[in-house]
Length: 98
Image (cartoon, rainbow, N blue to C red; front, side):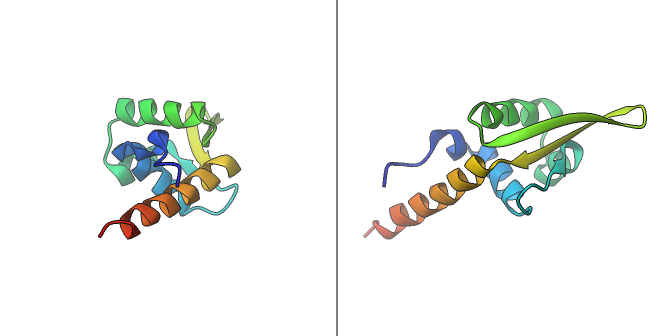
């Protein structure tokens, strides 16, 4: 075990990764739906998404639906692998506890 990934380990980022991990590969979730699901403010979610995007763990796609801007978020292959490794490391850590 190399230790828990500090990018994912922050509580809000862990919640974001867990929510996005429920999607199929290549699927995306609307920013607003993710915000409501996690009960976060726009600013708080944006900050955490930016950190996860900088790590290469997710993609943020901005587009327009009609005349309104829309933002969609999805895990990258790297992000999905990092989340799976995080869960494995967490289980190893818990299993190592007497």
